[in-house]
Amino acid sequence: MRTFIFLIILFLTVSLLTASAQSVQPYLAIIKGKDNVSYKGILQRVDANNVILNSEKGMETVPFHMIKSIKIRVPKKGYKVKNFTPDTSKDKKYRQNSAGKFVDEWGNDEPSLTDIKDGVIASVVGNILINSVALPVSKINPSISNFKIDYDQSKYNSQLNELTYYSIHYQANPDTAAELRKIKEISLKPTEQQQ
Image (spheres, rainbow, N blue to C red):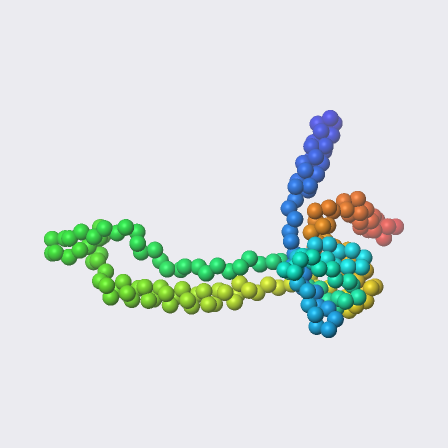
């Protein structure tokens, strides 16, 4: 029995330590507002009246009555052009064989200048084609979640909890007591329905 209790305490301790060491994931919020004004930035905090973003302009506070919709996305890193040229400069050593030709260790002839020039042109064209297709594909960033507020406080309040989960403030300071109450309420619902 003592071993069982010890294992439970150990499990809870490890669970709490890993939960507190969880990293914060920034989410990009794109807010469509009145008069076609849009706001874009990292979702910092959400409260009963405002959404606070960290944008390029600094901290921006957007009141709920100015919000038509909010899209949540994962911020993407910039695309870096990649080089798809095969590495042919692996210090191949060419030696003169008995016929007077320069060959590598497997007997392949040394490439001529025209062969090298054709290979370089093909590599450059291939790199341009591959990167020109990969760049637009890398820009695709679908929304994780969409919230329709339509300048209405009741719609905003009904979606406030879910929207809060994406904010940096909530991720860094979660309300664990409220979450435990929610879990308890959810776990009690099926037993109440059975009676």
